[in-house]
Amino acid sequence: MRPDEVRSLLEEVRSGAVEVEEAAHSLERSPVEDLGFARLDLHRELRQGMPEAIYAEHKTPAQVVAIAAKLLEQTSAPVIATRVTQETATELLNSFPDAQHEELARLVILRSDEHREPKLGIVAVVSAGTSDLPVAEEATATARALGAEVDSITDVGVAGVHRVLAVEQRLRDAGVVVVVAGMEGALPSLVGGLTPAPVVAVPTSVGYGASFQGLAALLGMLNSCAAGVAVTNIDNGFGAGVFAVKALLHNRK
Image 1 (cartoon, rainbow, N blue to C red):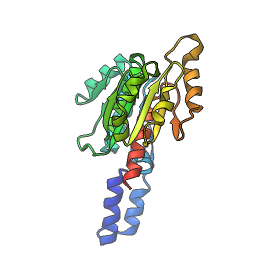
Image 2: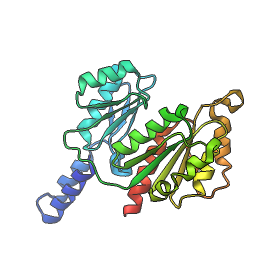
Image 3: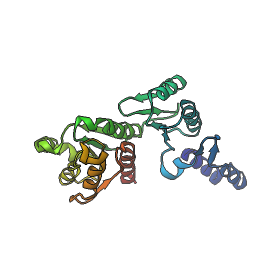
């Protein structure tokens, strides 16, 4: 059940148009939809403010399409499929022609006919190098789909620190800053010392052997000397985008 449906039902109870027992019966509807291969959490939007996303990796195209169709029946918000292969993206676009494929980010964004973009604040997505762009684009596409305005700041790694200082005002103007970096993962500490906004750091698996597929960047970010830097899992741009939007939504309350 969508949040707007619950509010409408409660208003009808208050006005006397719907009996309490009738409303209780409506709310008894199971929050789980069993598709056989997946059990969908249909009440996640009620609890978290956004519907369940689809982690498409290792799912068949047919499974992803079936999950997307069911989720779109239950929400007016965007449904996001992450880690989408080209084959799965093609199937989604064939089934939902209005879907948006963010190829570099490996995302497909699906919207119901009722969706209207909310107006939230600014999320700055900062990437250290061009090699970090796929993860940065995942964060960007996610935050934008969920209603944020995104300021993309690319290729400002610490090897040329003047590049970060040149965009300091843009960092300070953002409500939340997502910093995506591989190698030694030092960029979030620098950014965290320049902006009053919450900073969420995303380590990437970019780097030579001793980077250990992003572990070095992850540990560097966890040991940031800038206070208040949160860290996601390696290559988790989607998680960072969701975190940024939740932070903006919380600030509006």
